[in-house]
Length: 386
Image 1 (spheres, rainbow, N blue to C red):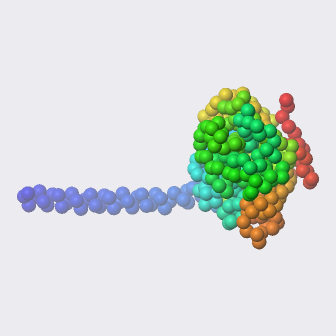
Image 2 (image 1 turned 180 degrees about the vertical axis):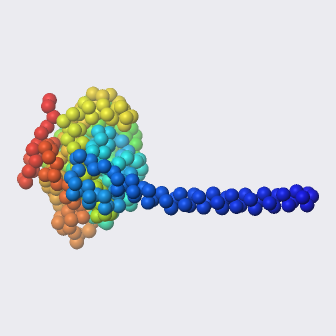
Image 3 (image 1 turned 180 degrees about the horizontal axis):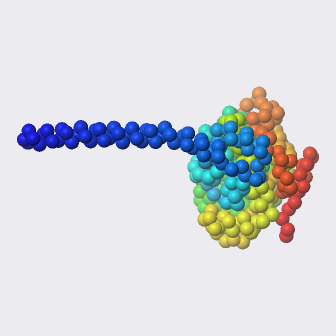
């Protein structure tokens, strides 16, 4: 390689480094100026009509103002109200830019702040909340959704007949299926810690096969799974959806990250307001709600099966109904050892598990779907028209 070419290459390399340095400098300058511009845009956002002047001024001072707020939605009818709130434009009415993300469990995702709110079974989330997971419950979702079933030709006719039998669960020992089964059995005098055995079978289809070959005698299933696949070949024994003893209980609740509530109390209030309105919509306009789910590819299967299940859930429960259910569930969990910390009282559990972020009374004209009127009812109960 001649000296002239070496000199040319050296000059080219120096020039490239200088260009790179200038480019990086421009990028850094752009990034540095991006945040002030964003803040200025936030200040100039127009106040939504649905937000009071006082609340809007408070929202503008909160860290979440003008940012995209992620919530967890992995699909499913039971947890759909928070997603419907986005599709119906309720979040936007309050100046909130909420977008769903998919991820792992509510406990993990909302607890660590990757998503700011999500909905799941009380049976899944209550124990982790008592152990310090960084979230709390802010709204009731619906009643029911799971039942204990046996094959239609099974000799098991009642809950009492489950004594000494093996029941299949699907999400592991100590998780929601077993916790729900514990309380179902306990309600009818069966000791779930001694009188039955539980066998974890992850796959529902494999569970059906296990029932058919006698490996297990019964199983807890989602009601929808049976409606859609085994309506004529399985029989319900007891249910948190249909058994009269469980009509006064919420099954699922919306949980919200504690830091988000603390740092953004006004945003949190309006998020919950949007979700409660969407729960009311889901209950009173089920055909439209289900159609939204189909239109956005969040629902499959036969529409008649989906609607049959949807209309059993009594979406949009009151705070009083939800709190009353939480207290009863907490008491049972402590007695049955599902909550292992014996130093906790029901009051301690409630202090960790519930926050009145947006009381029902703050939503003008709100109606709720409580199938049983709670003791301290303050909101009108209105069910869908048959």
